[in-house]
Length: 301
Image (cartoon, rainbow, N blue to C red):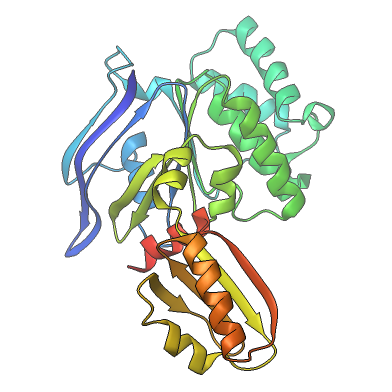
């Protein structure tokens, strides 16, 4: 069942089109990454979904949410969350819980539950001004979850964190995806691969590609052979580009990356040609293109 459906969503700022007629849906219980380079339209899209920006045209509907004001079912964390640094983590969660009209007894229980979940129980009485970047981000996710939203939206939740903070937040999202539907933006493919079920790849304000990670891997993987030699492969790269089983040749200096139609034939013919040309090789690897190759191809087109 679809929790969220977006149709022909467009946002213009004057003559600039930030988001251009995008369509997608998110199924309930999925973890989805809005993936793309900086400036692709990810933040603008999330702001429209959360109600912080009004679309120029298009529709946003929540078939899985039957209420007049859908904002009470959405949790949102901006890329740079703001806090009252003089408050403690516990005081801040209690504050946002009151804004969400959560009853006193339930709020007390929910606050302690979330502090435990995000790993801030021992720091709950410390002032937020003394929190690290990772701790602040985890507190931000806790505030977005305080009212038990059906959809949790996070804008670049790990982009400003060091490797340890990034790992902590990703592990927390792995736990939270069991509890709610998650949509988070990132420009780092590895983050999406870590925890997501589905991806929406944006480029220039449009959805360039979408689907489950598994389906995209199967659909876009291509046979590829990588070669590294002792000397320059410039002439050899030019000569093999004409082979009927070769689709594309890239590389520089003493390396070559050959996209082939048939991996078995490619291995046999290319090895034979390397021997025939008397080229001394350091590496010859046959495999398939990665999801990162697909992502780079999509965003660079």
